[in-house]
Image 1: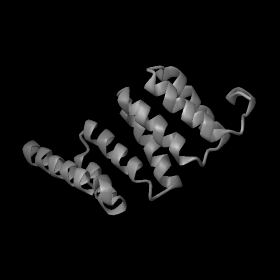
Image 2 (image 1 turned 60 degrees about the vertical axis):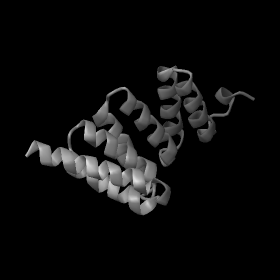
Image 3 (image 1 turned 90 degrees about the vertical axis):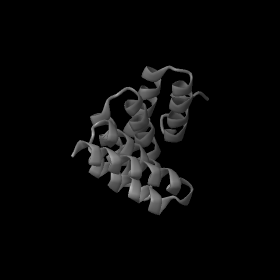
Image 4 (image 1 turned 135 degrees about the vertical axis):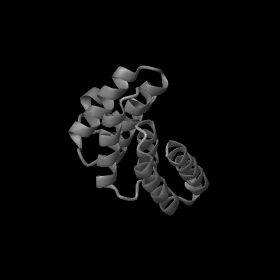
Length: 130
């Protein structure tokens, strides 16, 4: 049975979106992530993946919306905080980005060092802008 014949398969749509994204078919990936969200609006990975795709396309506000939704569904989703922090850096909202990277450092020990480096980078940018 193909994915099209199994409309309740939120994970399958999300996974196919990941595959499409890796293949460079961003439009189809976006459709799959959105379909997964339509089928289950409480499935955080679909929002995070869609946000990541939008981030890569430079659609920072839309990406931030998806990451924020991810976090509202799962407040311990470290990758969503990290990704939103990156989007906030692109928008030059360094103070908000720092808050997100602080959450990453608390939630995911494996990403703590990387998050702390991002915080340091944001602090330098704030200092240079003053």
